[in-house]
Amino acid sequence: MAKIRTPIPGATAANILFRSDRTCCICRERGIPTQIHHIDEDPSNNDPNNLALLCLHCHEETQISGGFGRKLDALQVVQFRNDWFERVQKRRDTADEIAAAKGAVPANKPSTKSVRRAELPNPQKLKNYILTLPAIRLDAYGRAQSLWDKGGTSTQRQGCYDVVDILEQILITLASWYPLHHFDGLAPEEYFNAMTASRFAWHHARMEPNGYGSAGTMARLFVADAVMNDLEKMVEKMVEPLSMHLEDFDDFQWMKAWKVNSDSSANEVVEFKDYPKRILGRWLGPRKYVIFFADGRWGVQRNEDDSIEIGERRWRIEGDKLFLTFPRGTGLSTSESTITSFTAKQFVTEDHSTKYEWAP
Ligand SMILES: [Zn+2]
Image 1 (tube, rainbow, N blue to C red):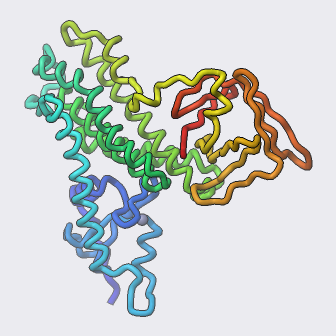
Image 2: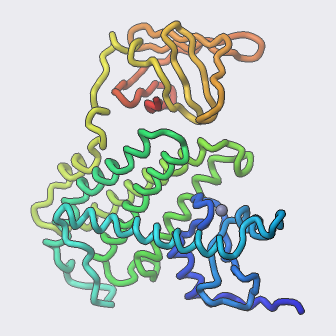
């Protein structure tokens, strides 16, 4: 007998999406298309316990039969899903915990439905929260830093995801000072969760004009980093109008504190004369790693574990200029660019402000 598909009620679907952070509960890759899967294969059984959010690839794995049954069986999907729900919830709690640890009062729940009102509720509470945000951000980066230092693109990506979650929680908390359902008629957590997911999807799509997967695993790290930057910008953009309603709020000082570099040693400025010494080692440039060797050779690495391509590549530094010789067509070409900034963790060259991040 054919199984009858009954549409999943909207509220049930919304709940699964939100609890899963709109992310496949198996591979947990953000920014790829997902669908709600019926764990028992019965499309009419819309009991929330029978539903899990999977990407198309992981969904296929539930369909493939191997030696002793399904590659990914129902029990495994349930375990993955429950574990994922728990992790998502824990990450969401982290932002509030950090805020509390820094002495900021947690979210203010709006009690009024009115669209227009005379003044902001609890401005003092808001001021305290906004002033605490730079410390919350630094704390978030500090936690992520240990993952970034460990290396491995998937670990580093996880570090970015953790920061993204905390920034998302900050946006949700700031939204609680707006009227109820102010953003597109939705609850703030619904609104910002969908918005973040859509940023992931957009960055992922735009970075791979040749189709998903064509830019390699590095692309996913760039996607996570780009979303992190978007959300930081959004926090600034929400603080802007809110803080106009606060007394004695110095927006210039706040912005300075908010944007402070998360790793103090990274602020160390490298002097010209030290450039040739300090450039040695591995850096993460646009879409690939570059490695500078003391003997004047340099190489590229397309992915974390790929071998280093060197060939005829040579580098030298004169003053603040970086000269790179590399194969082009059948011959060699040499580019010249000025290094516009050089700190312990990053240097930037003038052509398109190309950034190189220290990636030992
Ligand atoms: Zn997946």
